[in-house]
Length: 260
Ligand code: ZN
Ligand code: FE
Image (cartoon, rainbow, N blue to C red):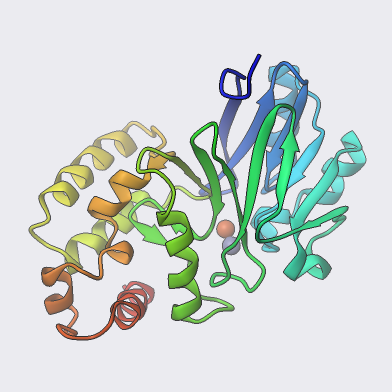
């Protein structure tokens, strides 16, 4: 079987207040990764339900709602923990430090690692090019992006450009269900964007029934995510920066969202 035919399964489930837990499973190789460890019990329960054995933890960044379950899960399963080299000291139980340009073998699947500083200084994302999916932690959200706790707008903008270079139909698994609140903000800075208005309506319907809005796609984000749309005239005029450069527009949009 070639790599392109190999199957991969993603199991997603809610954790904490608005996080998602993700299990990534290669059935042929029998390997299973938890992408981040927001909460121990739901992850152990999901492994049990699926009959999967945890072999990997893939951390995106050090925050407690992403790495807080590392040690308990490692104790319970003996899995190996992969995390950002740039932040190794803040990743509990880290075994393998990874960063920009590294490629992991996960069964017969390739996982590429990218450094995406901004939300934290050591944030990384995991991209599976042959499977058309990525796990982006708190860098990009549906119609939003991560807060800049440890990085500059320029850094975060450069990080987002790496993600935007992937194909439009890439499935983007972000770590939080923030979509409805993000849509409310997006509508204030880019009113009249028909794709955004339509998406906001659809998201409201889904959330009324507690249906997840994750994963998203890059195509949907390019059309509706204000943080990726500094070229929009409406957005620029709305935030009072008609002639600024893209990073300035991004920075101002982020500031407005922080105060929203
Ligand atoms: Zn975070
Ligand atoms: Fe988070």
